[in-house]
Each structure stands twice: as C-alpha cells, then as structure tokens.
Amino acid sequence: MTREKVLLVIQLSGGNDYLNCIVPYQNGHYKDARPNIKITDDEIIPLDNGYGLNPGMGDLKHIYDQGKMAIIHGIGYPVPNRSHFRSMDIWHTAEPNTVGLKGWLGQAIRDLDPNGSNVVTAVNFANGLPRALAAPNVPVASVDDLENYGLLTGVSDGNQRNRALNAFSRMYTPLLGSDAVMDYLGQTGLDALRGADILKEAPEKYSSSVEYPDNQFAKSLKGVAQVHFANLGTRIFYTQYGGFDTHTDEVSLQKSLWNDIASSVSAFFQDLEEHHLGDEVTVLMFSEFGRRVKDNGSGTDHGSGGVAFLMGNQVKGGHYGEYPSLDPAKLLEGDLKFNNDFRGLYTDLLEDWLNVEAQPIVNGVYEKILPFAS
Image (cartoon, rainbow, N blue to C red; front, top):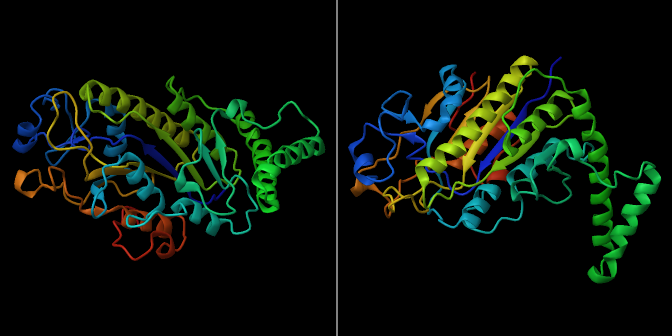
C-alpha cells in the first residue's frame, strides 16, 4: 500500500551545543577554547572526517552508518539572535527580520489540506501549540498522552458533547464580545473533539515487539508511530525535548539528554522497519541556536551557528556544508558563523518531500541543501 510522505519535526529546545554534539576533536582550536568541558578523545564516538559524536549519541551511529542521517553543518540565519524566544520564533515562522504571524508548517498544512477536511493532518505531541504549526483556520491536534487523549470523554453521546462544547464557547462570548470569536472557539472545539475521536483508534490498532525507553520523549515517538501506522492521513508530526540550555554542568547534562533522544529515535526507526513503513517518514531535528565557542567554566552560553539533522530511508546521509571555522579571528563575536540558511533546508522539505511550494512560506528563494536520495 502506497502512503503519502510524512514529516516528523523534533525540536531540541534550549540551544543544543553544536561543538559538543558533532565534535571536531582533532581541531586544536576546539581543545583550546574548551579546557573545562571538552569531550575527551576516549569519550568520543568516532564518526569520520575528524569528527565524533557526543558520547550520548551512540544509538544514532548505526543510522548514520546506514547512510540514513544527514548532518547539516553551521545552520542558522543572518544576524543571529541569542534570545531563546526570538530565535525559536524565527525558526518557527521563517521570518528573521519581522515578527511572523504564520508558522511555516501551519502554512504547509493549509496547502496539504486546503479545506481542513482532515483534522489530524498535523498532530503535535506536546502541551501547547508551537508557532511553527499555527496558521489561520488550520486545525492541529495537540496530544500530551495518546492513551488518555480526549475531550469530554465521559460524555458518550455525540450530540450531547457538541452541545456542551457550544455552551463552553458561549461562556466566553460576553467577555470577548465577538460572535466571530465564539464561532472560532466552537469550531476549534468541534475540530478537537473530532480529532480526539479519530486519534483514540491508533493505540487500539497498534502492535509491536519494539520496546521504547522509559521517558516522555520516547512516549511521544511511540505515539507518532501509533498514529502513522493507523493510516489516519497525518502528514506532519511535531514533538520536542527540552533542557539544552547548558550554562552549567554541560558535559553530563548534554550526554544524558542525547542518550534519551538517541535511544528513543532508534526505537522509533526500529518500529518503522518492523512495520515496513519507514520509506514514507523523514525526521528533522533542530535547535534554535548553538552555543558560544569558549566555555564559561562548566558550560556554555548562548551562541549561533548550529547543527540540524535529517534522518530517514529516503535521506542521503553524510555531511552537508563545511564545519564553521574555529579560528578565533574568523568567529562572529565569539560564535561560529552560519554557512547554511535554515530556509534552504525548509525549501528542500517543503518542495522535495511534502510537494508544497516553498517560496511563499520561507518568504524568498534560498539555496537548497539537497539531502534526499534521487
């Protein structure tokens, strides 16, 4: 059975340290800049080209060795912003120069399903809706726990639940003073209700021999697998893992974070392969920025020039772009310079994976990175 292509976006919140993630451990500038937090040669997981993986990333090494993981070096945008909120907002809206009103994926969802006929075209596995998924009149189902997901689950009669949601929306009308807002709330509630009824089928249909790690991130990825296997027409999944703001105790903290992520992602890909449904899924993993080149004693502060990853059966693995120079004379205010614009990567994903026109979404034409196998 042929299925449409699916994109899973994993947001690494807090600013993943590029230098201690894809480690240029043979570069003397790296060791000079990080006397306190460098990853030592005996801890490195050797990769190639003089690079190594963070010791917590062992479960991703076999995906790279299979040629299914692309490492996008030095990704970012001109005039980097070191605020978590603003930089993440730039990634979410593809608008570095103004405050964007529409998320890049929200616009893609609208193009994929212009009539909003499938309320689970996009599913977000997290509390709260990321701005990346937000766009006018675009329904997105947000799920914290797929096993217990639902609205008014104690009300079994559909008409009764619709009346309850309508009453709920009307409670806010005097305060908001707008019939349009009331209608929007009512429609949003009904869309969420429909989405809950659809998604509750996924765990019931799921069967797998793969054991996921015992953490919330792995639970989210298992939920992605369940919904994907249920063939509900979901094209975009979104989830996130936080804690990467490593101002202190970076070495042990980043290793622990990556161990959770790598083991969970590995289990997810094993699940896809067991069900012969890996060809339709591409995974994008990104963070809002990298960290400063020099350590601060036990960690690193906000920087620029980061790394992104694409993974999947249709991804042409390897290194994309050059690692930014660590020469102190070539840094940008003490940070790595970016050499791959993230909007070029978005263009790849929109046009060559989701078959959506990229220019109106990324607000221009950007050089593609071309990480997909032909």
